[in-house]
Length: 377
Image 1 (tube, rainbow, N blue to C red):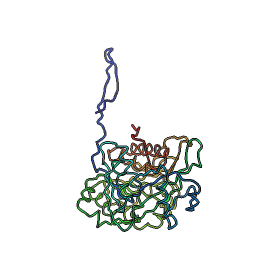
Image 2: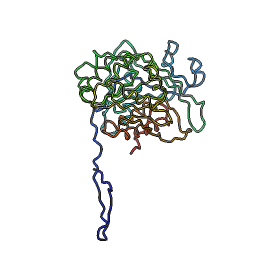
Image 3: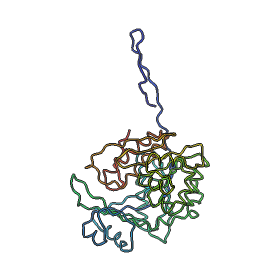
Image 4: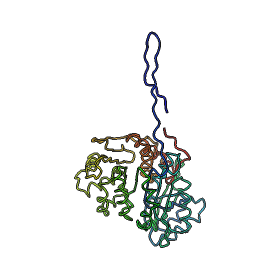
């Protein structure tokens, strides 16, 4: 219980001070937050120009691995100071949420597919270190998905580094099977334990039937189902499964580029971000007990969100441009911060404030990494 000064008055020459007791936010419990997506083992190492040239990479590349990149993952692990982290968009977000919450551990559950291999074992270790309750579907057909972050020293002013290129090999992440994992009684019990669900749009390319099962469960039980537009190609090439799940989406995330593509694909005939948010909010919805919330980030510009029937702008935290090291994890971090407040039943404004804080921390570092504890109040 927190004691807060409510007011003061004078009576017969005596100052009367009034206090009110404000209860703390509800404590989260284990498995309150559920995430499902494409797990990747992030592998980061410092490389030189010869390494980039060998694999035909440019500084700002963010690409999917081709045949010519297969040896890259074997070579990069032989470098000095290789770092491993549990990655992939959804896993990053639930990892950030857990970091923001701190205690109890294992507030966040995560499902996804990995290979029965060494990288899979490392990924399990890293998820456990992040205190995420990861339950992976393991198979032998494809190796564990990986994302190589090739860190170069070309950009050394103000002590920063260039945190690219990034080369992702989805591999096992593409192999998730609803019948083999989500439908198992022990796993479905974990789904039922959650109150908040988050799945990035990327998973629409893997198992839309798994997304639909979770989304319908959330809707039928008046729980909160969140999704992310994730990338322009999702709206362009996976529009059908995206729109099939949209009626079940209580909170939709995206950035300004993804929002513009979504609007174009749906024929909104506007490029005004606030108007796109409003039109998206008003798309058909299954659970009418919850009004849909739409949250669009815009980098250093204001975050746009629907608050009730209004569209509101929320300024991001100021940061010196020289302090920015790597913006690639900013979107995942924003969602993670937002979810950390959401599972504690905070107001929308507080969820956005937590999201802005988390993103502000992550862009000062290479990859989706963070200090031991948050400094958020």
